[in-house]
Amino acid sequence: MKNMPEPEASFFRVTLLYRGNSYRLICNVDDIIDCETAECAQDLYDSYVQRYTNTISKSVITIENRKGGKIFVYRVNGDTACLCVHRPDIDCKDMCANYMK
Image 1 (cartoon, one colour):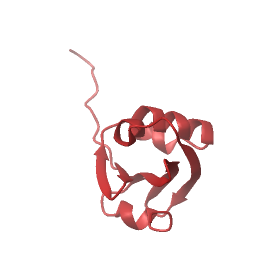
Image 2 (image 1 turned 90 degrees about the horizontal axis):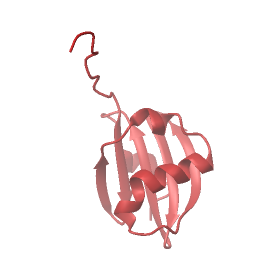
Image 3 (image 1 turned 90 degrees about the vertical axis):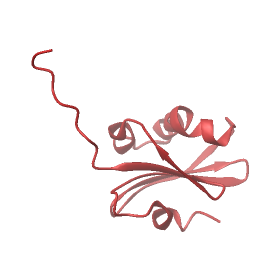
């Protein structure tokens, strides 16, 4: 195939923290970076997070831009789930520490 661009590796990682577990997600990082509204965060939950929490019951607590990344914090069945898009040298656990029990 001519003129097909080379795939680009993402500079960011996407990690989900839920119930003491950490999951590395494969997804479109740009969708997460560009997301700024609660409605968009709900869509991200439905697309990427729900399969790990096994529930559709959730609420968006916050969306925050942090140094080195961005976090989406959800309340799920009385627990907290934190979805992070972050640089590889930044620990998602540190970014979400204020919200995780």
